[in-house]
Image (cartoon, rainbow, N blue to C red):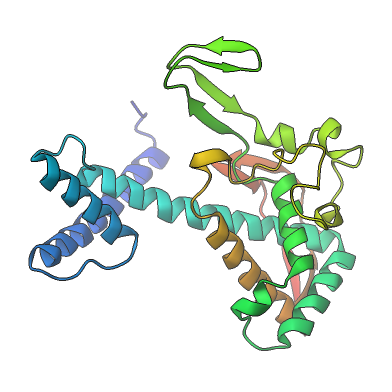
Length: 270
């Protein structure tokens, strides 16, 4: 049970407001679907279609997602998506402020491909330097510092048999900073370690885990990287930037890894 602090009361109010908005949105969508309107090809439509299909097939809702499940999925997709991408861009601005030579290289690539025009999909797929930079930022400052899984049956990992129900935590941050995997320069910002792709960036091709791994890898990873490439390209087209003297480097985890004291950056229009 949460203590009735001002922060917790505010969090409860915000959660209640978000839930009310989503319930209203879902109610309207369900009514439209029942009236014969075609399902919209978006996340909410797919979740509701799956729920209604399973309920109709079994005659009960035991195997289907409840409305509460749908609400929680929508909250997760929205907040997890916006949080991780914004944190990635924040750390990218910080590191390019610390390493202006890489900022210059990235800007040169962006201007070569797009000039001052809006980035297009074909050009975004050709952004090698920008991609290397984003990968290196994700290695040094992964938004999620650990991945947690629960065993659903007895299984062997590393020669040890774990029974069903055991929580296994994969320490992403520690793996990303392991010198035995990445080399003695593991703590340095070196985007060119990804010049030949992710699989050849380290001694273990599975050591890069900013989006998790396996069948439950983040469903939004490609979208998040595309968002980040577009945003960074548009920033580089318009601004040069450096860290302000007030910036204090202090990575801090609150859900995702943030700069504890913010990221003060000085922009200069170009």
